[in-house]
Length: 75
Image 1: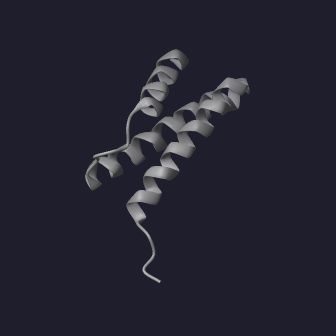
Image 2: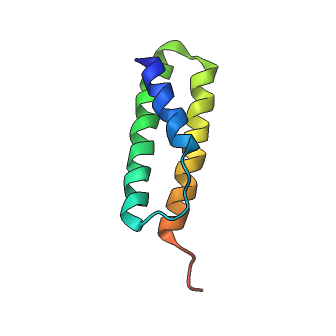
């Protein structure tokens, strides 16, 4: 199960963000959240540093997606 989640996470991290529609960005953000929460459940039991590193990468990618969704403020 862990290997499957890590494989999905690596595939997600490798995706390109360009030319995504808004609905694609929302779906990607939700997918990242689900992956992070799934990996976190395993991390709680094993305390494997590799899992923490993958979660950090996913969180960074998710933040970039969400930043693009929210747009720039109109000061």
